[in-house]
Image (cartoon, rainbow, N blue to C red; front, side, top):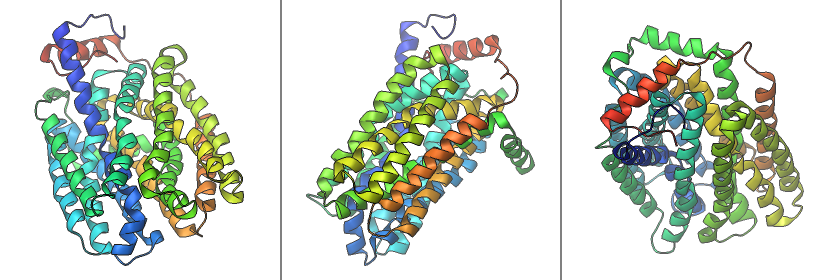
Length: 428
């Protein structure tokens, strides 16, 4: 039991609905990026561009997704979680329609940035809702549960995209994304706020900026935040590089790309299960360290096989599978640790940690595009460097002194209030 309370059956039912709604919000990233990956080579032909330039639609989305979180986080701390989420989803719907009707690469890139600005409201405020209810260790378990559930999104998104290309053109994929946005909007209509009015922070620019500066100078925040950021360099190098490494270089059919992509997602899902089970015993920081060491080793193996073509397609897929699987040990623990450092500013902490992840990720995908030489080599080396930096940040940028424990009374009162209002789950 996470807290000395036994939730009633109605509270458990409300908790399941709560976690289901948060899972949908967390899925905005993969549903907006992974679904259209199989269509990138075809989009390059229709829009009269090159495969390397089409990767701008990935990196531009990641930049918007990362920077937009810096806006939604403070808005969530000031106005609560629900209203900003609804606003973000509405912006996402408008921009997604714009992507579907775009006629040039420049138009699609602009709409992708706006799409990202709306999409990022969901994950950043979903993480803040978890932080509103749970402490660091239970928060890591809750986030692992969310990532376990929402891992279905990156599993089925490229499969859906590849199958739709068999019947429709690439624009239909964006219409399908709009349908997902409408479903997400429906899922939050009954979601109640987890942030009491009395706990809401000011939105004055000076205070918001000061809060972000405090986080950037806090070792307890930077340890997990940088670990997550460096790891995402490799994650989005994988996202941007594998469509061309698999489809163009290794001649994999676009409709089969999703099956290869799903292999890594299955590994990530398995590691989320392991993380959820092991965090109570070993702690989130230890699990994060294990994941970082494995990311270092698998990243080095990826660089070797991608550069030498040793083992062909299986030789490339195998280390990539291991690397991506470590997302299950690194991401939830890194985010939970970052938010635990500033519980009174959970929205801003979630936003800044998420911003670092996606901005670093955008940098990684841009480097892959810049170094593109028609082989998987550049992707492999970027992933290898990402693994090294992830491991170094975990092992060397350790917080000084003991991490202050959260008052048990605060956690208990938060859960009790959430259960009485039927808006939060018992810890997963």
